[in-house]
Image 1 (cartoon, helix red, strand yellow):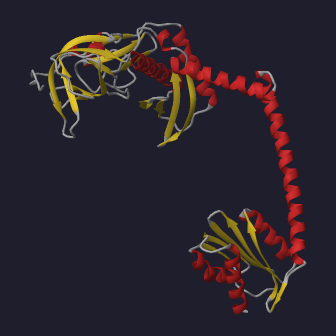
Image 2 (cartoon, helix red, strand yellow; image 1 turned 180 degrees about the vertical axis):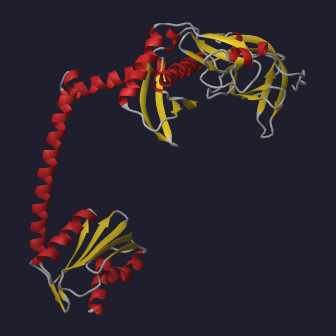
Image 3 (cartoon, rainbow, N blue to C red; image 1 turned 90 degrees about the vertical axis):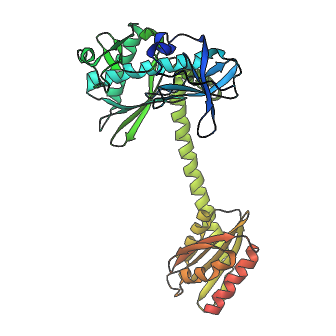
Length: 414
């Protein structure tokens, strides 16, 4: 079915989300059903309760005759159409629309919370909001300020939640530019007629096209989650209403689980964690000391069985599943203890081969050049300096085969 556009711009009274933000279902007629240039199916209704994306607030979802509405956008350049993108074609002219109320009310809470929090930062700290995004999990506002301190944020949160708990009416009024200019608006209107002003008496007056609850108490608790620098200003992340309660519940469950694992009361968790961290650092230090002793012992053992070559004494070995950092340290211990030592170490790790070539201060060989000559055989990369170089590549051959190639090249070089 394809219905012809009835013509004429849809008036404000056809936007049911403006006449009643709490309206969850409605009956209307289709005035147009078509595909956009990308082949996506949409309908235009005689009136709608579905809020279209705009002003930082996402679109409503729901159903039309039990068919999912997957997107709603306002296409102003085409006679003010509000397009409802749907999953499949509708076959009746009359439709029953149902709003996803949980999503709608969540957006009402978050959007109103943004007004309240932005007003707190503007009125008390002279920090205007220049950007707003209502996301699926969190909400952000961009504040025009170079710095933001924790004390300022805490004060703004207190001011905002005080407004919430005082349960002020949230009034919405349509007016022209002359009427709007009589109010202390946070931002200069861009329109001259049909300016929609959302008002919290003696606190916030703001031009806005979004959906809002009737009273601030419905917004629920507002909580700031953090902030960061963004394009010369500050981007602040917050949540409100049911999102805050959900997060509190999750955090409380985490606290209970941690408390149980630590065998401690929730109030004692910080002290218990501090104690564990101190103990962990002490253990790590003890392990590090023990590892160093083991490396020195391993170095001494390797020095007992060198191979005499013209340039010095060669210590070579293949290691399996050892870290490059650890073997590099072992190599350094040997070359520092024995200035004539040359270490050729290969490490086998899964499908990789790594190597470390090093020499003591009395050895006049270029380890970096020797490494560069060897790496192509394992399609590897690496580098270093004359005294120490390291690299790695593919396990095209075994570690023993690669080490034999390295040693052969060394013997040819000297």
